[in-house]
Image (cartoon, rainbow, N blue to C red; front, side, top):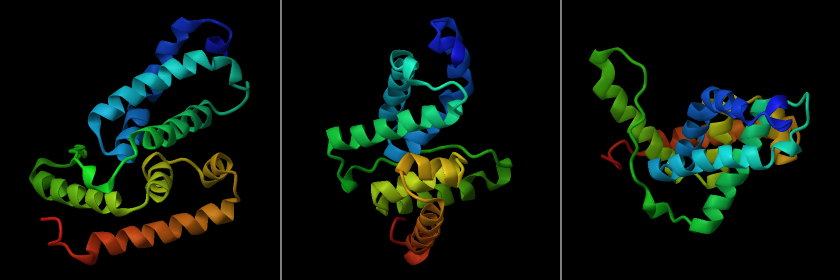
Length: 173
């Protein structure tokens, strides 16, 4: 990232190779829309190039990139004025043994439908902490709050998601 910041824009390809899949998955789990996720991923790397001077050397690149992504998701929802009834099921393929594939697809669909029921900020918290593996310290810095507050929020959100997931298995089938 330091090279990109200093004008070696060809190094942006390496950043793209390293982070594009994770960023796309973050957008996909946040927006639940493939086309929007494609567009947001492309836009993110345009912003990385545009705002490269704001990167502070020594700062974790992952943290900086996800902070940009997080702001983009907020902007996206503000612009789109997303309604909960605009859910389009996505099929993210888990890496599983072929014999369990159909069962896992159904579970994953049910999980995404339960995630859809969560408020956007809670869904974002789960995506960052559980799917993207960001540390609580990083999430706390992004949200400008304490680590203990993030831990409590994650715990409560996971509990709420479990309740939604198991509330009525026939609700979504």
